[in-house]
Length: 335
Image (tube, rainbow, N blue to C red; front, side, top):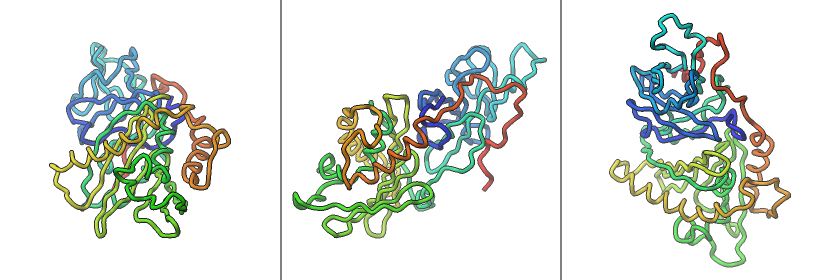
């Protein structure tokens, strides 16, 4: 379960996609998850399998802040506890719960922690500037036919900008054929921060790796904030959901959201065919491909992925262990 992507926080959809009245099924690293909103509007995540007969809970409905299985009408609350078992008023519901996942609604996105019935040791590492009241967030998603690690390395790759994106964000970067790019990396608790200089001249903007699967590109005009965030969410070994978000402190009118999203789609579309052609599908050890000095950020990601995430996973489980108590620890921390 969550093979190669266990025990991490990841966004899985935009907050606007999760409506109060209906469940939403998603797949992360080969594991199917159902999302819905509890009676207080907070997000809930369960494995998308009813513990009774394995039916997809995402085919059911949301009733009074609980999700109801479409097969036999069993209902589960925000902790995954069975609160109603039709025809069986004497059922011992403590042993009938669904498997729950920690979930959050932050910075315009729904997040889950990829380990069942687990209390996360930390909260999602979100850039503070994206949480400010003067910032407007908008976005959407598209799917790539690639392993998420190839997509993620592409997002962290400075040198490709003037080639793939020569008509958009890479326009004018390479002033002459023998120009030299230097990448300046800083380790941070949440990942890495990077800037570049070309021919000794510092360039505007910055690019952050927010471990494990988010890239923030800062292209802010003077005195304003404009951040493009991409989350590369593994659907399975061959497909990646690219969640594209724009954060801006100007032109905050909702009617302009489609314009910014089309810009994101255009930029991501410039990368798509190239990344999907990568072989092998998953990033290999660094020594299996030829690298140079300007690959420093992607090599950092590659080393960390291969050492920390690639062999991770959780035991398969359709039902929670018998006698397992409620897990209020899955609730967000109080503010």
